[in-house]
Length: 203
Image 1 (spheres, rainbow, N blue to C red):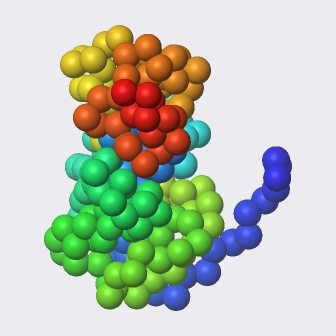
Image 2 (spheres, one colour):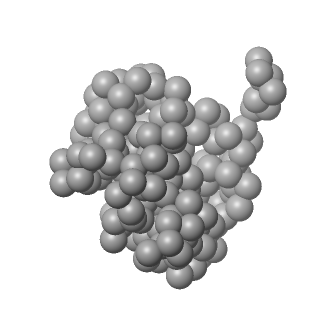
């Protein structure tokens, strides 16, 4: 609901190895889901951390650099389009999250995961609805994941400029759907997603 104040977040952990975890890319028709895990350094706070969707691209990129410089640990991982097709996007997202958590050095002792489900990792933690707006570590993870996936879409755009990936980032916009219909799916498209599946059926 617009204007609704989020309740204060109670975290059942008081140490300094708390990892925020978030993902981006469930909705696009192409490419991987990307997850990040970030352990912030209490001694090196970062101003302006917020839900990545609420920030401009330039601000996200500046914060991405700052997070990478100042965090105690961070990791970015993905699950491929083929894994999305094999597992479904929900399970692929959790796979990407587990990969990011596993790559943290030092290891996390507690997880704060954006959303309403934990990804099935052995490290204890809690799921936090709208967590990227409620805790800076989750916001930091959302920024790293978003910048990484967007960069992947820009790289894909350089190889296939006729699809417009740099603009729509793979989401099912009118432009993307029209290109898909006109040009057909690429190997990176998610075969299990409706618009792609329909185009494949016509081939």
